[in-house]
Image 1 (cartoon, rainbow, N blue to C red):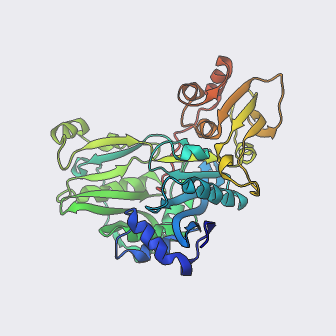
Image 2 (cartoon, rainbow, N blue to C red):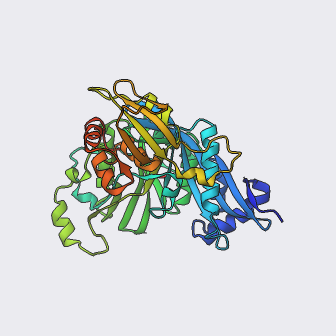
Image 3 (spheres, rainbow, N blue to C red):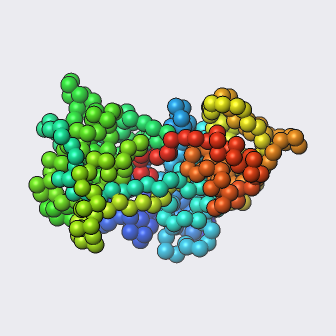
Length: 411
């Protein structure tokens, strides 16, 4: 019986995939259709152990907004290992292979959601920013507008909902996935899921909506999986819908949207935090890092990067640990090596070395965090392998002044 990495075969591996996802708690007995839909969103890889698929990884193509430019992106949507295949190094090798395949199809950046910090750092990924999950009483929303009667959105509207997400207001760091199967599967996953929103005047385009699920009983809490809107007036109307539910619903949880603070829309956030402390409907803001990213094409990513002010040039000695998990026959083996980096109105990364330039020694994950604007160079020098002179650190701090990067799409 064979062992090794290969592509997922629906006919051969479907039952093993169901078993695997049920073992890890991702799938319940009556949810097999969700997995069938999800596996259509991109490329799936398995590791066959003694004739059975005991590992499954899924990647899906999309794009990531960097400044005002959209870069080819690959999301690692699932990395799952069965109970009998743990601690064998299978996950690292298979995930590295999946990323290499995505790069071969044009991906410049790869991203994923983490189950714990440290594991995917071995593949060159670096932490994203703190995301804030805001829990509040919808009756406390400081929204004066009266919402129109919304449309119900269900799984049958998955394509319209997906297109709405693709056409949403985008910001630096935001991610979009091309396959509508992702949105369809996410909607199917929520047994108590529901959506509310609005179509345009012609009734053809779903302009703004949210998708949520009821985590509790009649009083909630409601957890909003995503908000999709094309402008801030539409965002306010969606919040007004949530406020209209406050006669019954006592708690709503939403990831803080990019470039605003939801606390600004609450009338008494501190009062409610105190009086609901440790209660069933606790009003609280929780922060944590759930996503990581890595650059896969350094020259491509920097080619469209533009910064005002004077030009900065330096040598970059870049370490990419992912290369240790790819075979010698792999067409792409990471991006480690020596580069001359130019940052300015026109930026670039060229293979080479200039003894007259200052030097930055770092890892792919740490450099990705700098490039995205997750942390300044001086901070990375404290918490990462990020070695440079004080003068170069200051110059990097001065150049990388970017908006907070937020994917605005869970994956």
